[in-house]
Length: 234
Image 1 (cartoon, one colour):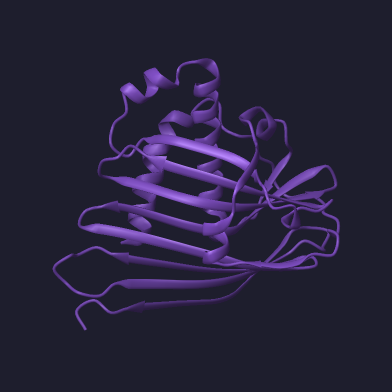
Image 2 (cartoon, rainbow, N blue to C red):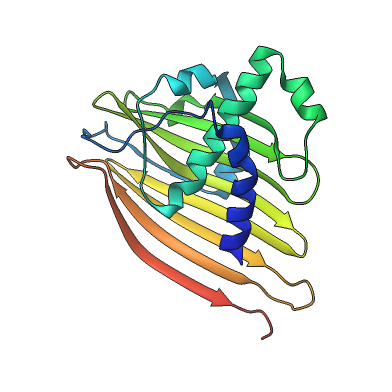
């Protein structure tokens, strides 16, 4: 059910991205980032403050590489959401767009550098992306902490933290993604909890751990574990 819900909500975004999405490329070569070591948990995600704003022009000017794994799928769509909303705001067309919103359509999005300088280095910049849909069902909203790794004139974007909610009653979904960054490796932990029936107590949960290695000729992604549990009707 959770995959259907995600697909449904993402589908509501696609029609606004036919022209004007962020650019992206396939992985080529990468270099080792500088020494890095920190972690992003739910408390960190909630406490991060936005610093210097990022524009859609900046994103479109980057040679972007996305991690080719489902753990990063949301990132591409949400950045496209931001690009579209920011372009509307800059062109003066945002107010008209909001007046014609329908359920499931993106309403607002903002992107900025994380204000805390301890999360920034020569090879890594950490961004804060916030998105939300029109306040009706189906709906979604989320905060994304994004790692921007600079490698051989490429921008490798990796989700480092996510708190995301979506719903279309009686179906609901929550996603929490946390990470540990040490040197050239990023260890990502994702948990998606969904409930498709308000008459049956319990929920379905999928947990996933992925390691991304940036110290190879090609971006390396290894799925370490995947587990599913279902407490509905138990």
